[in-house]
Length: 477
Image 1 (cartoon, rainbow, N blue to C red):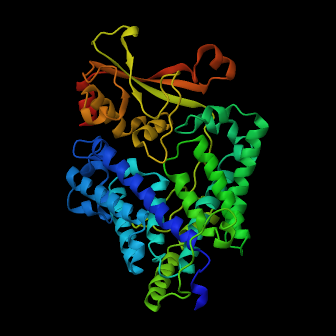
Image 2 (cartoon, helix red, strand yellow):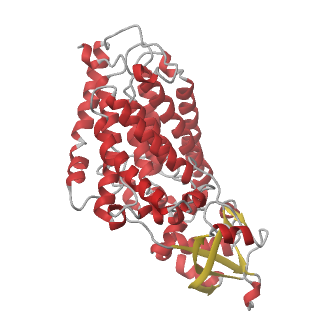
Image 3 (cartoon, helix red, strand yellow):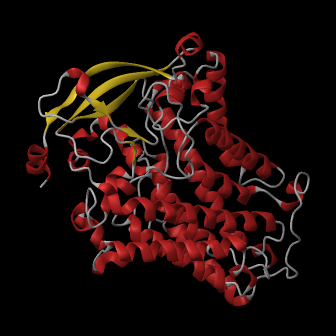
């Protein structure tokens, strides 16, 4: 019975519970501030028509959506998650933090299951699966259940090992160690350090790729070995994720991975660097809690079958959910690397017969626009609209949300303009709008010294010819 109690993992539990709860706060705040404009009652894709298949899923909105109900869901989630960050539910019986985390899981799942395109990112399912799993780590008065810690390690393994496999299977650039020649420049949302990372020498980029393979294909295996080897594997994962935090904006993916990797850190190893809380007085799990956590681990083992098969498949799926509860998901990113960065520029004109000099550019908070503007640092906050705009050159220009966005800009819709960094018309509707495609690259050191530019861009073609409000209304409605 003593094996089931992980008496050497108190730091892991504290980081997992408080860290996952903190990410839930970011997620709920992100949803509260962005969902109404994207999917709300007057959003680009209002929930009832976004994707009716999601209504068969588990969601509080299956009985009807309103912006007010969404706000209630989000701010309730923020309050519950904040209590967990403070550690208050953890001072009670083991079932109290369990109920709190399961509430967060269900509230967030209610949003994801009606979120459609705007919630189709792997880190949404990752947060749901993490929230459900850490729900069974118990309270401060009893030791962490070892089976649940193993379930967290299995989640980290799928996340990292799956990402490593899909890279090797998906693109020769990962196999010949050249992927980082391009990635820092072409990733969806660069940050202030991305240009410096891109301008590093090519030998360094090859070492980055090699380090990535070690972190994703070797370190996850170490997590299941005895201490201190497991802590070494976890440290490798944490350090590589911190490098990704420094060089890119991937919402909460990297931060959540860092938190989850602490499941492999033992208290004895952590004490070498950090003050670690003393383990609980008890060395065995209460009988009822042992039954509950064993049942939870058994459920997670059952749903582990399909993602395990997916890891071995030559047709490996990336960022896929196999059930409506978002448990036992497939993960992985950047199976192929974009070599060139193409960006859509949305421009408006105040008159119906504009000259070329009359077109004025809209700018967004995260995506590149003005070549002189340094990219911002937004993660772990998730700028959903900016992320989807990165996919437009890859084919998303045909998606209904993009046409709806152009129409809302023509209408000068206040909800959408809140998500625009620069509105060149100061809240007034333009007469026409167009979309042009540009090729972007980071300015080299000499170009930056001479012009101050961060980006060098050149026009490619017109993606959407000048259109007015009436034309787009027919297309969207």
